[in-house]
Image 1: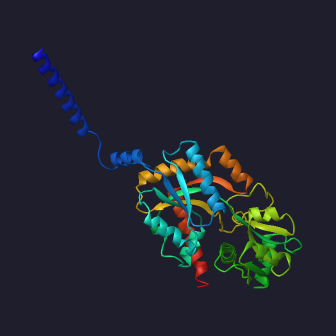
Image 2 (image 1 turned 90 degrees about the vertical axis):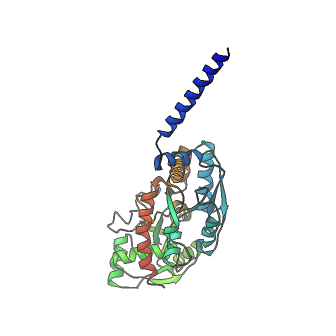
Image 3 (image 1 turned 60 degrees about the horizontal axis):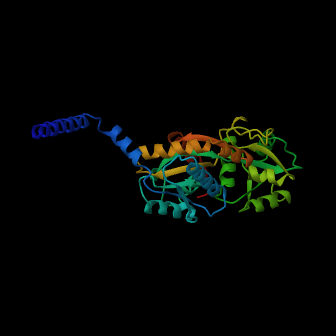
Length: 329
């Protein structure tokens, strides 16, 4: 029995030794490390920072997507949305910097971030982030009053080329309406005059009251208004089903779009494996039928753009925005 015991222990030792040798033969380096990181991530609840107050589109979409990810078990930990408005986004970025730099603290923003960068309003740039991807977005329309003499964008542009600065555009300087209109003006070669309007209500009042000729509105704002306005061009990727007769700027030959995407960003130091885990969950969530229905019911476009492609798009948009910013700085 004693010898049998020694034999048994020897066999165990050889088996253990064999396992150790096999382990040494396993792949090491980036692939193995990435797999281990992905398995360990997320290790705790994720903090999603929204640079705006609660209740806006960016906040609502972040919460919807987060709830869907938890409902479907797409990540092993829940997402907690926190709001950090103010400072042209600097408050949100500073909160991100104080958080985890491995993907447990991320930001849900849109291209207002690029306007802040173009105008130098915060101590942050694209190099501070690693792009996770876009989960759809919403685009605006350029409108005139319903009784305007201009029925098409080409009619309006032709008039402005013959009569520079003859039409008044309602904008808030440094806002999305200002930058989108200016990008179109730069691309098409025309110029308007500005009247200050810092909110959608101000722009609507000025156009309906005959004190402005042109203004930019979110598609949802335009459709909710119902009357008094005429849309000339939509700045989305494709025509919006709710406005099938309104052409996009790109189909009219102008390389201008403003999808204002739901952009998910991680700190630049986040491991690629963690970004991939987040991207996989976000892509599955945006393609969920309930999310798709919500987007379409709220004049939003549901789509997924991977992180690298989203960053390339953002870099292109930033260059166009810098050109506009140079005219007002």
